[in-house]
Image 1 (cartoon, rainbow, N blue to C red):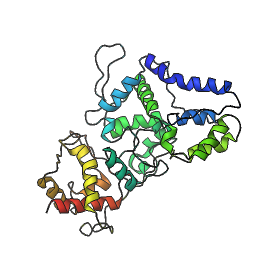
Image 2: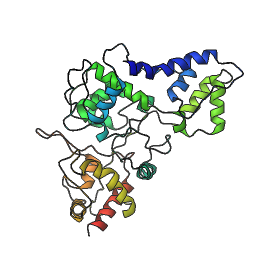
Image 3: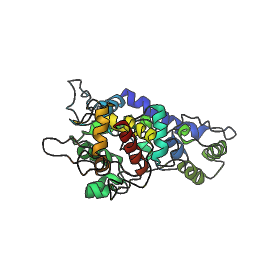
Length: 342
């Protein structure tokens, strides 16, 4: 509990200090200032998924362990929880760091370049970094996949986490203290002003408004314009002719990045899959051979449809939406495999 209180204190201090800020002194905003705190100072309603601190056992560290390891100690110290999922952890499909160079766009081409430079996985799920700053979840075409299950998750981060735990991760439901611990951890990886690449003129406008010297509503809108408050999702189909492929011409060098940052993240040494891949000629030629086929080993098939859980084998592969991997990148991957597997 102490770690959680320590984490939440800066938000309370900001509110107090804002009230006593000398009117002739600019509000000090730094690269590490929380975007949520700034928006609240500008009059926006605090998020409904603020941590419930009255629940016993809530801990930032417990939340971190659940997200990264899928298991954590019980609050009473009597051993560890049962693993949340036998198949996945949150980081199987989601990063926990910034993954887009410009947070205004869900651009897979720019993302691949960025994550490759920083050696970050290129994953089917949107990063959890800044998830507390979003307003909606399971957007776009995800309703086609999950149907009515999306309704309690669309506008509620707790509902989205619950859906991910039981459906996406094929695991058990979370206890209240686990849910709040995960939220406590997620609030430590919220967006900071430095993530938004705000120009100096915009930062000055925001500072003035926070001091009461400008239009707070307009300043809040300015802050919000520098990041997406949702993660768009558009489902795509494989090409009508899988031998011909998509219209785009593949680039094997970019395809190598897709293979290294995406395919090997899950399949390398069977990290999250029974299907093992490596950088051997055998792996590359196998995928190249099956790429245009209608089988579970076809990359066109699994990238656009994923695979389904089945009795006795509930681990599955989630598919990539348009915003997470473009048709161009699929063709880049095919070009790389064809070149490496020949």
